[in-house]
Length: 99
Image (cartoon, rainbow, N blue to C red; front, side, top):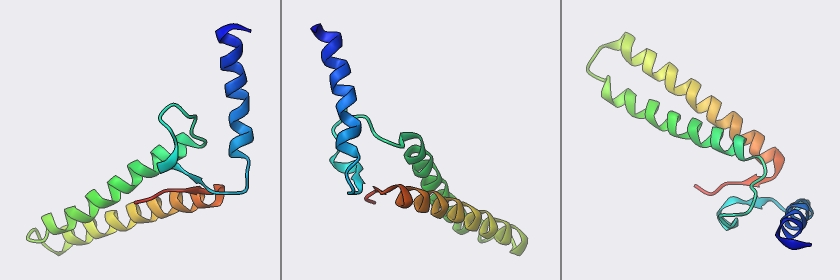
């Protein structure tokens, strides 16, 4: 079959391995292995970083007054809600992410 046939065979075998009823552990995946739901995982990681950044902004604006503090708290709450929403979607798909 040659190299191309071998590659196609490998790609066709991946869904069979991932279709078991266990959660997919991203930490155990090899570098070359196809990650299911990779775009959702990367979106979750960005939302996670954004939530941490917005939480840190609350401390940074502490001396600027109550309106600025309230705006920062609201932004941090929205970012945390968005992060939790993506985490719930990943959990529903059976993707287990380690912190």
